[in-house]
Image (cartoon, rainbow, N blue to C red):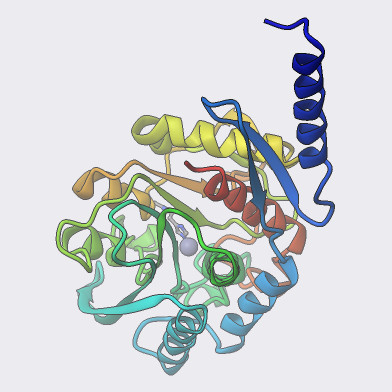
Length: 333
Ligand code: AHN
Ligand code: ZN
């Protein structure tokens, strides 16, 4: 095929073009992909800003514990919906009265921000926005009925997703994105009262999605994804329902230099908001959730204690998770 001077020149020009593309952007991370025709396609992954994510986290915590039926909860709900709108999403506030394990009626609200709502091809990103009404794992039993800040367990994951929403207001994707803030995840029964009562908002949404016949390629749930030195093990239900998505996300983390956060180990099986999405809607959905092998529960030491405050949140972890999500989304075809 080669041999003539013209052939060699074209070959050289092609090579120089590829080299030029590879080195053309220093401020953003770029990958290249060769299409079937041999042309080089640029993929630029935006840079996740952890200062923004941290600020969105702090703003939620500043309302006070976001326990359903409280003023802080109502105010934070308004804040989250307002931010999604500010970033150009179409917002649905899905209200429902949901009953706790001990039969308290909660005025719950799932908040859904949709980018390109008309696009049938979608990806779902989710986190719970409520915080736990009782610090039942606090070292001091006097705190066992005190509501928690839920800086990690709630606000941090929503902060990461708000920063993703901001990025989507700057740079559109080919895929439609739904950012779903589930309510009433964390009113599960304290161990002394028996089990159950978790994930009420996601159970409701998965059985009454905000649009008829809702479908997405896949879903990614974040929960406790912001703590200092957090490590993410591969959660067992996620592997069972959506092993290929676990692989996609863990590979993206590796490629972005965040392999020390996303380790190639199996974690626990966690009852969380991804279960209803898999079970009722059959949308393969994973849970990115911190696993701590050094605690009895497998959750971080701050879990369901009064120490789950802003001091437990790390910008580095938020960057690792947020950048990995952007890497996944912006490499989708
Ligand atoms: C259980 O403890 C059964 N699930 C944990 C779900 C959870 C609580 N995520 C955050 N807080
Ligand atoms: Zn919790």
